[in-house]
Image 1 (cartoon, one colour):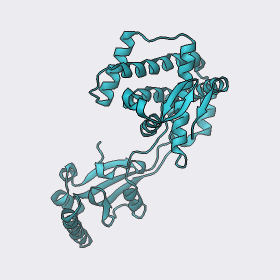
Image 2 (cartoon, one colour):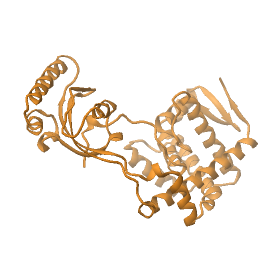
Image 3 (cartoon, helix red, strand yellow):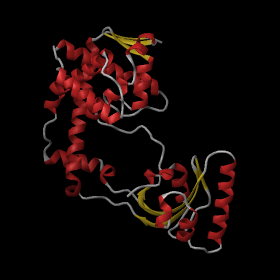
Image 4 (cartoon, helix red, strand yellow):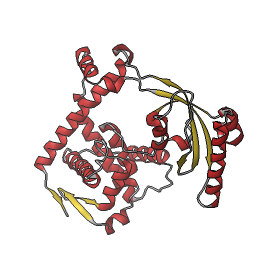
Length: 315
């Protein structure tokens, strides 16, 4: 089921477990060319390994390279720098262990990253070096942390489930219809606003919501009488979710302005939140527990490496 893109929220930093974040290192670091790094300002050194300001900015945009837990609103640059310091510490550890990456591994990683990011980038010497660093870090983490992610026993799973019920429940959902009038800035936007106000007046006079959406809406929702489907409120833009709080099933909102135009939303049905039984979510709990153990082990590893390293942070 597709959600109208105008109802969707802007991208926010979200949780990613440690293994996924290291995969993201390729996308984050490969976007900075070697030439740009030479001219960039150095913000930190980890046992001689350089971290530049553009490295930090790319990691902040990407959402992490090691732990990937998301940026704190008050100190996003500091968080991103900590992520890169952790990556460099792991790289130093990998080199000390004598780990290497084969030409075949480099080519496969380059192809995967290019396909995932849609990048048309040649494998220059700078790109090759960055890919090699990423592969070395992955190998080092797997060697030092992978074996510690043992299969959890049932008691561990039940304990985690009991302490984190909110993670495994089904949140409240809403079935929605929308009348969507898209418009750019300027005169077109003013015309669209007048149009949607006239539609709102028709609704208040008792005209059918679906019929009006079919006649006036932009995009594919028009062919479905405005039906969006059943969605979680977290999947909606803030302004749409806020308008829904004021509605009861069968009611519609006033005019909602978004960056791409104007909407009127109708709440058809509310499906209450519910808790799911342990057996229903057992595999999800198992994956979450293994991820938690892996991340704890990784943090312990990075902490030990940092105690033995020389880390210089420049103001």
